[in-house]
Length: 99
Image (cartoon, rainbow, N blue to C red):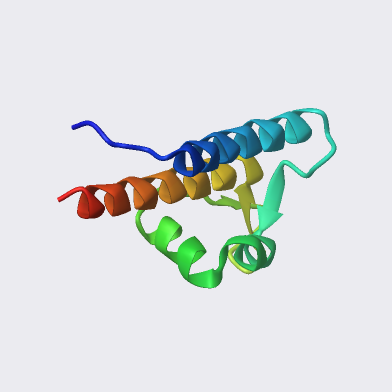
């Protein structure tokens, strides 16, 4: 299926890709943490998104210590999931518009 993208649509998709690459670079360089707590992830992406990603098994959970310790998530994986969801939503919208 072919999608017709406007100039602004294409810029938006490229911007999302560039943000993902920049985030990965910052993590690799140690400028940003490699993991985020559940609370930090929820603050950045929203509680409903983080819970949904956990429930769907898309988001691997890292626990340190016993069951009462906080959950940690890989920052890079969070960014990848958020970017994929943004692009998927955009393509679904395009599909609906082009019907």
